Every structure is written in structure tokens, then in C-alpha cells.
Length: 116
Length: 113
Image 1 (tube, rainbow over the protein chains, first blue to last red):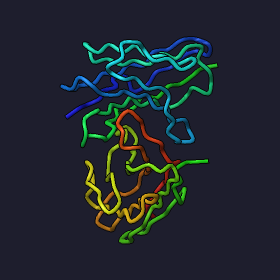
Image 2 (cartoon, one colour):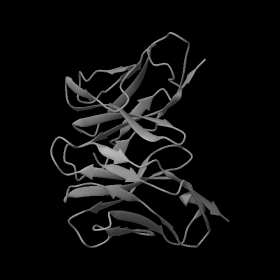
Image 3 (tube, each protein chain N blue to C red):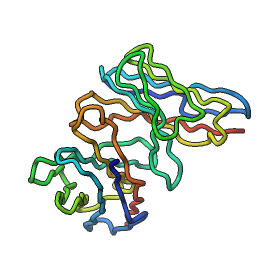
């Protein structure tokens, strides 16, 4: 079974600085999808960014980008120019591309604090 | 606007009572999911459904039940057999295509009183 590991339970960053959140996963599959979700204090889960494993190019969404290292099974999230509104729990997630395995597998999450 | 609605936002249950959490989506998604979130535990899958009138147990299904009589609706019942039901419950939906992530509801906070 696939597993997702977020080894850092908490991180902090100064406003306007850059922070990188780490995520590793374990799978024997070659084709899959990876996601980062944000959960602010409102507790609404929001999709931040998505990466397709067959694409070598790292996904980017405005200030959010990923460093996808398929061989190392690593999927880190970089937040540039951190803002106070970025403070949240962040969850890394894996989804198999194989039929019958549509469930997202989540890491335990990481709490990001943004200091003014 | 399309979305997924969970109700109520807060729910209180007495010992021995069953309670039902509502989840409705108008996104025309085939798959729906229920997760439980506890501090330090991340999200744990309770039940999921990929088609009407069919559902599967997740990792922590004991003490819970679901139904999927309509594509739009996936209610979760927390039964008296669930010994530690106090938690935050999240409902989600997605197309069957695995390239998509989930769309989540805003959650229900259940507290045993």
C-alpha cells in the first residue's frame, strides 16, 4: 500500500521569505498523481497544486511550486514571498492512476506559521 | 456555484445516540468520501462510494454507516458503537478520473456531551 510521509510536524517562516515543505511517499507504481492541500484555521481544505508523475516539469501556481523528484519519491512544496494568509496546515497526498485505487492517501500534515 | 455542502457545522451527541451528518454535492461527481480528522492523525478514511447504491469501508469504518441513494448525497451516521466520536468530519467528492483531486466540504465538528 502507498504511504505518504511528512516528517516535519511544524515549521515557521518570516513574512516575505521562502519556505519549503517536505513530503516523501512510497509506491511501486510508475504513474500517479501528487497533491498539496492547504487547511487554514477555517478548516476548509483547499487544493494548492497538483503534479502528474509522468511529467518531468515541476508544477507551479503563482507563489507555489513543487520540486518533484520521482526517483527519490520526494514531492516538496515551495512557498515564495510568504504571506500571513499562508499560515495553515498543509497536507501532501498521493493518488494512484490505476482503476480501483482512486482514493487519496494523505500525509499527517504540517503546521506552517508565518511570522510578521 | 457548484460545490459540496456539509451540515450541520457543529453537532453535539449524547452518549448512546446515533447522529447523521449530511453531505450534498452539485458537482456531478461520481465518487464521494468521508474522512475523520483528529489532531496529529491527519485524515483517515471512513467510507467511500464510487456509484449510487454502492460503498466500501475505509480504514476506520467501525461504528459508522453510510448510504448512497442519490448521486448528490452521501450521509454519514455515527452510531452508538463508535466509542470515541468526537472529531472533525470532512466529506469530499471527485470525478472517477484519478487525475483529479478532491473537492472538500467545510466540515462538521462532532462533540459528545
